[in-house]
Length: 291
Image 1 (cartoon, one colour):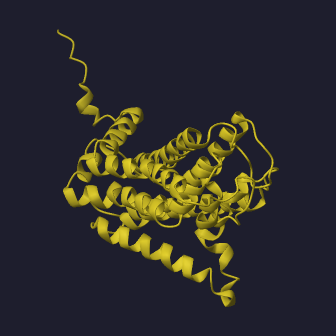
Image 2: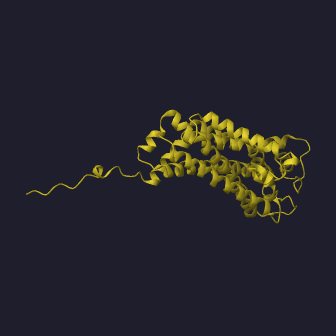
Image 3: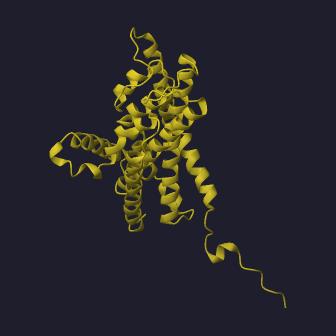
């Protein structure tokens, strides 16, 4: 009597898609979109435009200090200082432009794919809702790192080309070595990436509740504007520690020597809390969502 053939893999149910393959597919989907490349190109051009514009002003600000931390005052200090330029560009873009790009990617992650009918293919792979959310969150985090990284890279290169390696002065007036300056720029870019990931996580949570990416974009943009307005109301100072952008003006602390880490650590912890809460809400929505 012939032995029965071994059961085929399909008889035991569909196999799970490998996680590395899912992550690679997500990154290809994000970075092959023309609008993603256009956005990254525009972000890379911002420090170059600022640096060139500063060389055309008649009375540049002194390179040995000044500025209270917001984007405008840092730009005045960036004239003649190769260290300040990339962080000033990050501080300016963090006010609205960088959160807008993070919201765009977060909105496309779920709502965009659902609107185009491609999200169902993920579920047929098959991919569990938790793995799906992890892959999407990883894609948003990777874009956040790239967005902050390209601005920091072009900013430091532009500053060095215009001012040279002799103009690496902190806001405290101390002259830094080139490795020390690079470390400060890297810290600023990493901190901004964490803030952008928090914005993208909120966009993911909203994206899990709608099929329209523009709704996600408008909601996040409106939230950033409302949070910025609330910070100017002294009567609501009890609410300020709960606002995601409460520490965004403290990015200039990276330029001080020694670097005060209290406000930056508080901002990083606040962003981590936003990420945890937003991803939990997104998972709760995806786990109860049909299709």
